Length: 498
Picture 1 (cartoon, rainbow, N blue to C red):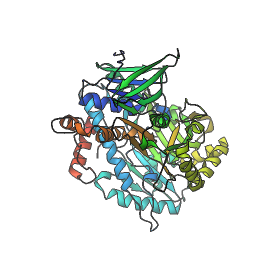
Picture 2: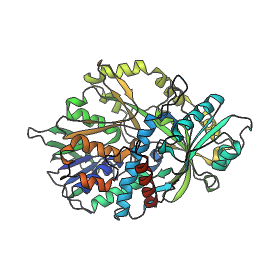
Picture 3: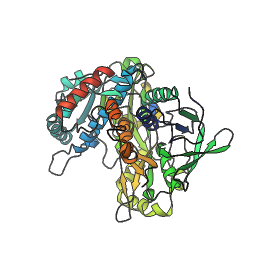
C-alpha cells in the first residue's frame, strides 16, 4: 500500500467517500503517472454518506423513485429528469464493469446484487398517476421491460409483504423493473481505495482534517492539513483540488475564496431508518419498493421498503423519516450551519426560508412524530409488520444546496452540483441525491469542466472510451447502444437483463 505523502501532489482529494474514490480511480486510469493525495478526517474511508447503512443503496437508475417524475397540471408526467438519472447510472455500471474485467475489483458481488425496483401507490389519484407514468416510461427504450399491475394477486407475487393484511378492495398499483440493483457503496468505496492504494503515486491519509485551502500566486493550492491525533499541521501544494467531502464541501468552497462559490449556502436534512435483520422476514421480500413522498418533503424523504445486502447478510430497510440537525456531517458539529452563514449568502438563505415554508412545516412535523406514527407509516407498505422485528438506525446527513440566483436571492436545489474555479484548478461537489449512484457521471463532469484540454484524440479520449465505452453517445436517443451496453454490463456485474 502506498502511504508516502508527496509535498507537491498533482491532485488533492478531500474526503474518502465514493465521490473522491471514483474520481481518483478515473484519473489514475487515464494518467497513471499522476500523484494523488487523499485526506480523510475519520479513521477509515466511507464512514459518512457512503457507508452502507447511511444511504439507500438503490443504484439510483430512476426506475422507481417517483420524485424524478413530477406530474404536470394537465395530468401528464414529466420523465425527462428520470431519463437523465437513468442513463447517468449507466456510466457507473460501465466503470465498475471495466474495473471487474481488468481484475481491479475481483468480485462484483462484493458490492452489487440484482434486485428488482418497484413503485407502489394506493388511492385512486395515485393509481391514476402511476398508470400514466408507466404509459410514458414503458414507451421509451430506457425502460424496456417495465411491468405494471393494479392486481393484488400479481403484486403479491412481486412483493408479498406489501399485500398480506391489506384491504382487498383498496385501489393499488405497482410497477416493476427486474434489472435493478442494490449497491453497497461503503464496500465499493473500500474496493476503490484499496486498488488505488496498491498503485504508486497514491496516498491516503486518515485522521487528517483539511483546515484551509488557499491559492498561491503561481496558481497552485496550499492545502493545510491537521493531524487529528497530534494537532500538528502540515501544508501540501497541489495543482488541482477536489472537495468531495459531502456536507463538509461547502465550508471548503467558502475557504477557497473562488468567486464562483459566492452566495452558496446549505440546508441540512437528517434522517432515521427502521431496519429489520430478522431472516424470516427479510427472506420474503426481494425488491426496492418506493412510494410517494409527502407534499413539501425533500427527495431523500421518499418512503421505501428496501432489500439490502450488506456484509453478506440480507436485511430490510424502511424510511427515511426526515428530521433536522444543524450538522453538515453525521460526525460533524452542531455549529456547522451557523458557521456557514456569511454576508454573501444571507440573502439566499432568507429567500429560501421564505419560499420553502412547506419544507419547514414538513420537517417540524417529522421531528415531532412519535415512534408509533413512524411505525404506522411502515405499515402502509407492510401491513403486518411487527414492531419487535425493527430497530432504528440513523441515516447519513444530507446538505441540500442553497444557490444564488440572478436576482441575488436564492433557490433550494435538490440535486448535486459542481462549483469550479474559472482557472479549472479547484472544484467542490455540493448536494445530495442521486449522489453516489451517479459518481462516475460526476467524475466525467469534473473531466469536462477542469481537464477538457486533455480530452483529445491524442490525450485521454481513447482511454476514457475504453473505461466508459458509450462516452459521447446519448443513450436516451440511441436505443441500440443503450441495449447493448446494458446487456454487456449486466453480464459482467451479474445483474438481470431483459
